[in-house]
Length: 434
Image (cartoon, rainbow, N blue to C red; front, side, top):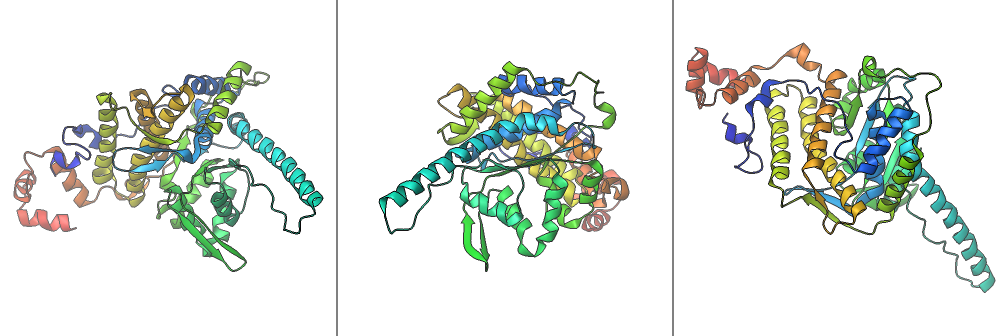
């Protein structure tokens, strides 16, 4: 297997063979690379709530995704995706997961409540005017405002709400296990398949006897919630969540309990008020912006494109050579998509907030996205999601593929590979067939 087979985007970009060595990424999450307002508030919340940075960073990413919504897409030269993010924070009970999430997402919830109150007032006023006019025509209420946050709903209600909110929604649930467990109750309805379609921005259509048919052409559905490590482990054991790529789509944040900071009684406090005020202004600017378009890699920054390309290729190498399970392979494949989404989201926030003429992602956005994706892959490792490797090891075929990758000059064909191993070409062929 020659190295050139892993030059995915452009022949000019090569991949360091050391990425196939199988090291577990061991990086820490960071807010560096995000808009200064976002970074400052994330750090303020983490410090004031006495929690690790990712406890504030993960809901911040979810809130930014919901605020930008479906108006902005990200284009990487081959595909166009929306900026929806499906993410979860894995932590034990009592780790103070909820307060940072409310600090970050609460601003959008308040905006929803305010818009709904204004809509109720307009509806009452319109109904009074309709009655005063003496019209015989049926009363038609004003169109409902956009709903950004879904707190709790049944699966069918979620799909219906998505069809009514083309700009997109964020499903926020403090206990993600309850949300996912509801899939079992609706297993016969095809809800999980429709949800998978929504995750990939593919449209869906719902037809029920009890109600009219509805559809959503381009759903935007971000999800954020928290879950305990033990519950996550049980989800991994269920084929319905593991084998169809459902869990592989998620950005999973997990920090070993030993690494979390100790909370001191009396020091838990509200985040810095100035940082909070700027955060609220930023979300309002993103929520009300009428800008739309596609975020692209800055064409004037060759290093930015090279960085994203090389990282994508590294994931492809791991997916092809090191992934000894369908689930691990799926995680690498979905992370190729998520790294572009995260970089695009960071670029979109900066471009919209600063009023730039073009929607661009720069090197700093891509560096942040690559580091975060390494952290998410590391979280899967720490949670034992790739435990098949310990049980099964590499297959014969994967060992041979690895040899051919690391020794391309000596293994250009089966005969040369056989000479390297000291076996016949026929034996190599038989081993590769498995």
